[in-house]
Image (cartoon, rainbow, N blue to C red; front, side):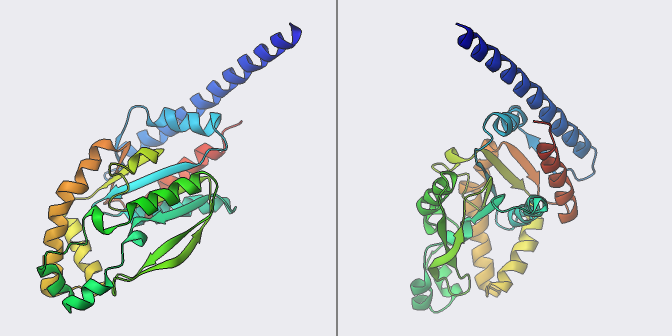
Length: 278
């Protein structure tokens, strides 16, 4: 009887302490968001009602649990910039096992044969081929790798060459970590988003996307009519496959925010989560 009483008492005070810590985290994060709202270009455009509470509970009550954060948005919206600056906040801890990044672009299927047979990107696009539908990415392999990382396993992601369209299976080794960031066009699509702990959508106006996209396309060997044909397809397929993910996102991020401000806010968030008295 005494032992049962002691256990019940311990559970009561433990749960009470957890709730106090959760309240501290929620207050800290809400404070950061309130400050962000005052900016001319805030980072957060939308936050779901339960996101902050869910993050606080996972940090406190599931201390060993991996956070899988999925970040999507249209091509050239700023997904990679957001991830890279979030990483800078992570690495300030200077410890291994803090973060791992899985990029959807690495999982493009090998289409080098199709490109060679067509003779050029322009000719390939005129056949109706599209690089901007979920079918050209091995989403099943990517999902399996993400699940394995969450389970504490090491994986080897493929590596894709955007100039030759070759996929190399012997890519980079990725180790499990506290935070797994995965970014790409289809990481919040049906069949993939169900494994995410936090779902993020990067919103950027179309005219900005277009300017960024053409600059990047030139770096990947696509110019002139080939670039025009692909961008028309990018815009069309985004309507069908990417923009609907906005509705499923826990947070909508502003793709116009500077890299410096992204890092400033993510620094504050990580600091708030790390420095709560447990």
